[in-house]
Amino acid sequence: MVKIVVRLFSSMAIGLLLQTSNVWAAELAIVIDDFGYRQHNEEQIIKLSPNITVAVLPNSPNAHRIANIAHEHGNDVMIHLPMAPFGKQPLEKDTLYPYMEEEKVDRIVANAVAHVPYAIGVNNHMGSLMTSSQIGMENVMKALSYHSMFFLDSKTVGKTAVRKAASLYDIPVVERDVFLDDKQNEAVISQQFDLAIKVARKNGSAIAIGHPHPQTLNVLKNKLANLPSDVELIKISQLVTPLTTESKPKVTLKYIFENCIKSLEDAWNFNNDLNK
Image (cartoon, rainbow, N blue to C red; front, side, top):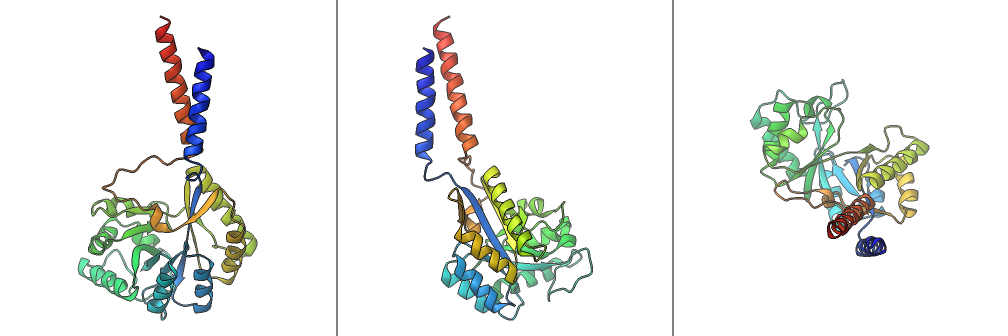
């Protein structure tokens, strides 16, 4: 009977592996922020892959044009919505603050949607102050609810009100895992890219955020040309799950192993019951 159980376990493991041979891959989504100011670098990044997501600053001089170029190339387009940070930094026009009235937030969001054609989602530009405000983010999510978009929390602060506020309006939320280029040094950016791959392999997927710096462009050219076979570059939209849709368990090696172990235990218990 033990041999039968072992054969059953082996058959199920092989079957699951064969079934998922074309499915199992760590998924990596790369979002490049601050589009709209550096036309040459931005166009080069777009050309690297249609699976790179671009986030466009709505009041930047090239916002409309670069969003159109990205869409025509097949890239997902997002609005990189300016939000107030805790620190004193140069701010974009129409930066959102927690104290703003609902009507003003709604107007700013509507203008951003109009300035960035084909946008399917939003993420925060800066925003440590704004994203930590429950009231502020509720106003943002209410405004976004009229435009059928998801929200990518860039997580510029540890404790954010994004997910709780979004849940009130059934807005899907995804979260950044790794920042690629806080330091504009190719060696460091390369290390951060490798970290994103490590996170993707561990969790099944990862979201990395970068910027259109020359150093980031150089690293992406090299890394994407040599992406490991067990890692797939995907669009950010592929990671967005509607709140009303029950998500299926992600097929990972851990998932396969746990299912095989459970099947083995069930077979073993069945055998013991027969011999009682």
